[in-house]
Length: 378
Image (cartoon, rainbow, N blue to C red; front, side):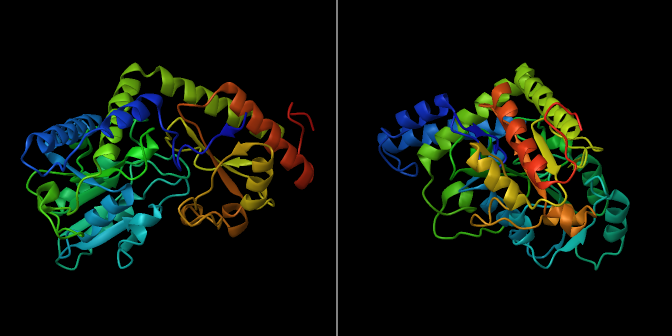
């Protein structure tokens, strides 16, 4: 049985989500229609909205459904054209590409945003109110960003803060108001829901200019008939993520598996490094660098051994390239190009971790001079 350890790219569809989506396929009608069929479909959409809102501890009327986290990020960054844009240097490509003109906020060596630099950039404004985008959890390293602290700095300058919380949902407690965020991005397929469903949570009083026009859906902020089946799946996945967060047991188990993986990997291959290990991280993610062995070589060998992992370029049409995240953290090109991301999720077992360790250490022994054995001996 193959080991799937790429949950940060996309987590497998949960059985309860699949069942709920199957039932939703039988719904007939357009949620904008006023007849009985349309009203039934609308109820399904609004139930999903309530469930997604609960995942972020906020009100349903703040949830604006989109086709993806990428679309939500684009709406957040392009929806306020009169604002000065600042984004952290380790943001997801969907943020960086949505705002190519944005000023970059540097991060420290551990991958955490430099708040002193952010404060200085905010102080050197051009008169326009700022809009800052700072992800809550980095998709490559799992590093948790100080969003609440950044939001306080931004608010003091009359600005807005957007956080891409796609990798945080279900792994950290989410509370939009406690974070101080004005805009929050979520995505279904990172939490065991379907691809093709996302959301931008919008604070009261804000009205982002629509990117898609043509209809009155989503309070005229996002035209297009809602993806009802996908949204039902999103709502179900959100409800399950809330249950997991409340129980805490599953996340604790994943953290224990991740910690054991890192300890054994470093004992077996002392040349390896865990990127971001000095910062607070979510418990499901590790970024392992094996200097001298390109990430693509590692991924190919692991794939042949039946183990799926990722790099920082999962959204780049199947290509593998040096990570801009690791480069922003000050890693040299050799290290940035030698890192693979192992991300655990709801399907992960101890056997999956064992399979990864066996395959990865075999690669290291074969390609890295002086690498040890899986038992840690030289």
